[in-house]
Length: 434
Image (tube, rainbow, N blue to C red):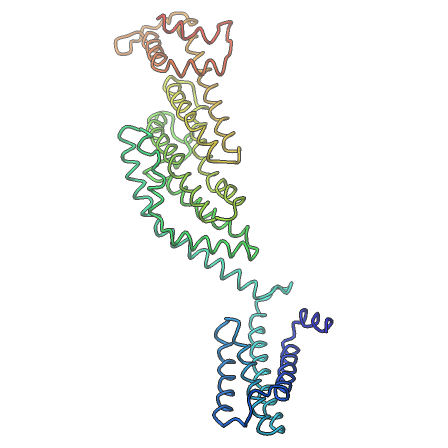
């Protein structure tokens, strides 16, 4: 019996299983006839017709539903029919067994036909068609759930626009702090739950990587659209490709948009994606952080790329002023990088960009020393706004240094450097003494 059970488990022949089921059914029915003495008397025609009809109905039901009890019902009614026929006459066992055999083989043949159709889609390696069908159905179900949430992204963007409009009035983070839940409430909890259930099915079925890839790609597109829209406004073109005479004006516009985009991303968008990942991948904590990192990686790199471009540009007092602002603004978000991302890659990238901004600001400010204290008086007498050109440039630098004194002191202390035997810390003192 143990060897037979192993053959049954490993066998893929439906005919073998059908004949085995028929044999067990017949033996059970005969046993019931001789040893079950509870019901006496011969059955009437209605009982025979009912058992045969219910057996055929169970066969039809097994073709349309897959609850798991249809085949048991078929065997039950066929067994009842055989026993009742034997109570009329033992010779009728042949009739009952023949009817039962025909229904069981018929079901086996129909199942074999279905498998033949599915086998047309088998690959040369002979993969299970049921697995392929499940793969397709689960992936389609995942996309359907994501599409349901995507339809509500417009509501999310509308709430986000309200906050951005308030933020743009005075560029204060207070308009954004603690508002990620308010924005996320525009997404249906029921649809998020359905997406979580689908993710569980895919992970259990062995499609963990495919599920993460599809979800990450979907959310990355949403972030990319947001950050490149006119609302949040990251540059859509390479800054270095813009003509030199137009670059400064263009960068003024894009700088304000970058400030908005960074604040909105770090305070609203990224926390929303983190919370959405936590709910969609509930029960899979290891996947949550890696998937969230993958979603935000491209958008974060895009934000930092703009700041890095400002740091590597040609030295001007305008660029120094912008670098100081970006240095301070990016520094304010370093703690948020630490709290949002368990992976330190993006944190290290942000710190590296901030360090480059600090070093570039230091170097540019050191050049200011050369302009004020090291360059001989210019011989030319071209006036700018009624002033000698060198006088105008010096006063601009001095004004800039006074307005940004705290940031400059912070940078010079964090990134010390000695140039031409002049200590960097002494530059602020000399500027103040003017």
